Image 1 (spheres, one colour):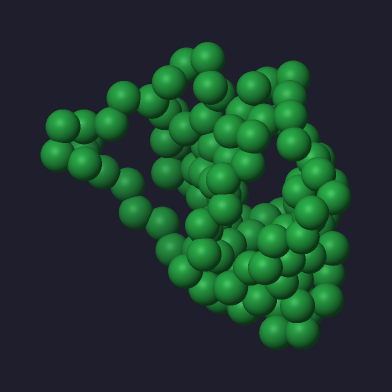
Image 2 (image 1 turned 90 degrees about the horizontal axis):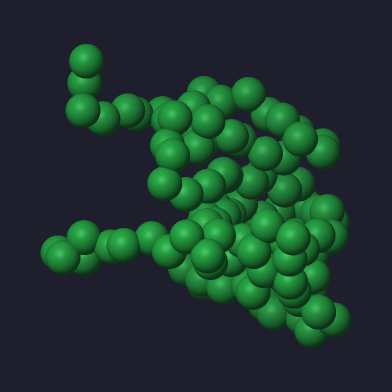
Length: 120
């Protein structure tokens, strides 16, 4: 059995609302934290949500395209290379711009902290 797993986003089934989610965590069978890849067509709103009940902190990493993230009523510009961390109870809504938007989300509960390795 290999000590690693590999998956290409382009090979994953389009799932979720509008087929915008690629369930990378499930494909890799990762267990320490959650993460997925999202592909939004141009001028598309995502799903407004929060994670207060699960105490899940999320980080969004913009890979391609532009848009905004509405967080508790404030708008944050999204562009490639931008990272946005969101508190669990904050309401968030991703909105793609005219070129569409692709991003990765990574999340883990705050009450079960991740311990990074000494090298990183």
